[in-house]
Image (cartoon, rainbow, N blue to C red; front, side):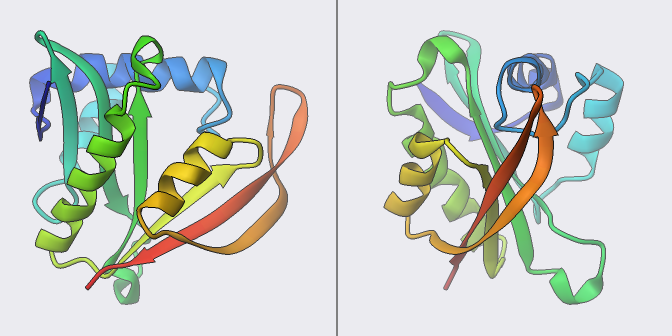
Length: 162
């Protein structure tokens, strides 16, 4: 397996992985799948400052992670939100750990200061993964999301980089 910077040609597979999460999980609060055109705009809003990486195995993208701008307000310039998704059939293989380690390093290299995550209640695996990498719990947003007929709480976690 190779972990590398994402390229525009990876976007179809990145989008497929993300759309599967939209349709089948509460890992994202998006409720409508993304088109390739929407994802191209998302991709182009990243860059050296806001990296996107992929895990590639035998020529297939099996997972991805991104650090995205947290806010357009200038005072938040060094704060990002982390996204990390692994293709269903490859979950449990340690790919999330590898992607997490690499995206944190990429954030440090970009000179970022804080990484935030929002994790839906019940996603114990994701919470544990983030705890393993030094993310701390900073709060719970009660019933802020509604998906699959349920109100959902969201846990806020953060990691302060060096």
